[in-house]
Amino acid sequence: MLAEGPSYSVALHCFQRAGARVVTVPLLADGPDMDAIRAVVDQTPIDFYYTMTHFQCPSNVCWSERKRREMLALYLQRGLYAAHLERLGAQYASKRRCMAQAIRASKHLSLPYPEQAGGVFFWVQIPDAVDAVLLWKRLRLQGVKLMPGTVFSLTGSTQRFLRLSYVGCPLEMIPEGIHCIDREIDWLLQNRAAHVGDSFCDIALPQQ
Image (cartoon, rainbow, N blue to C red; front, side, top):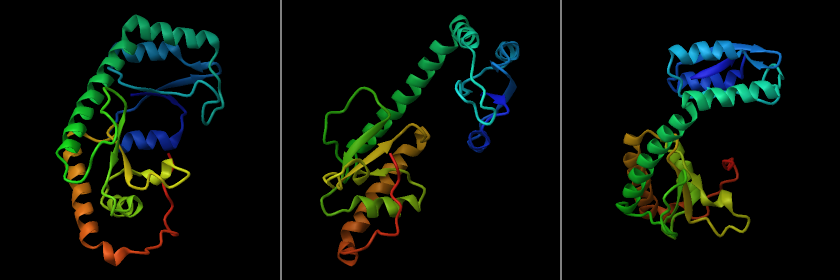
């Protein structure tokens, strides 16, 4: 992937931890060095360009209008934008199909709305006797990331729902993740009497 030097350190470290090979180009007063970008894309396949066109961190540089047009022209000329969208769409479609199949085969999860042909997540229903926040708390300790439905409601009407995103999850791990959710729901149903009245005051709910 491509980034500017300097760039936002937290993002760069996240990319590296995820296994990305980051190539940097110099940042000038009006945006990135376009000659350097052209030289990189001529020799190196680039899947992603991390940038901030307004008030770049840490430089506070804003791209000039000329640089914006140059970058757009470069993407269109090289077919980079179309190729990126095609690649991304294919990856997301495979993950969506995989998660949809795993949800349909799930013991406890169901889809309250008709399945859509796109998007980046599923809104699923869990049994009435299961608290989504407690389920979220237990699963996050196992590295399973989801969002409890309570995050998305001001009235508490969505406490028996979960939002499951497949964007950042490797394809091969999606079925195992759904299996983990089923397993924890089984455990909560079998032990629900022991958790009546549990307090979650010490839990910081995730943000949308």
